[in-house]
Amino acid sequence: MSEWTDIRDKIVDALDLDEVTEQVKQDLTRKLVYKVLPEVKVCVDKFVSKIREQAANENGWCRVRDGIVLPLVLNCTVWAVETILTKTITETAQE
Picture 1 (cartoon, rainbow, N blue to C red):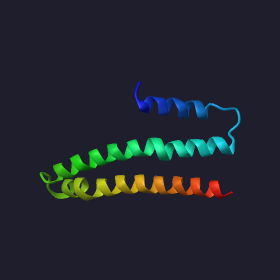
Picture 2: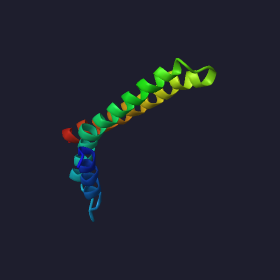
Picture 3: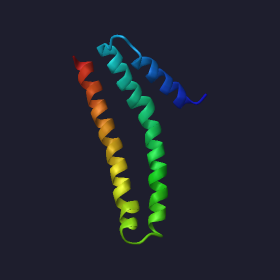
Picture 4: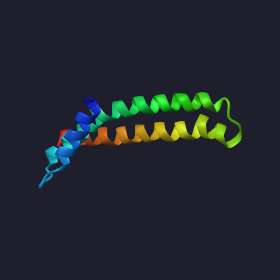
């Protein structure tokens, strides 16, 4: 079984609770930041690399989309999610 299915199963198990405690939320956040996001970054980087290569052969809006818009949206989304989740880990660790 791949590491992703292990992570997915752990997340599903963590969310199948009668009571959601602060510790559960912190554990899930840490797993997202340290296990899931690195894998997502690899996938996004590969995708962005391929569409940027294809952008060289595109014209007009498709060239802008593939060379600028999609890479920017994807990279900014990953950065924003990582920044927000990392901030919540830091904030809850100080309390």
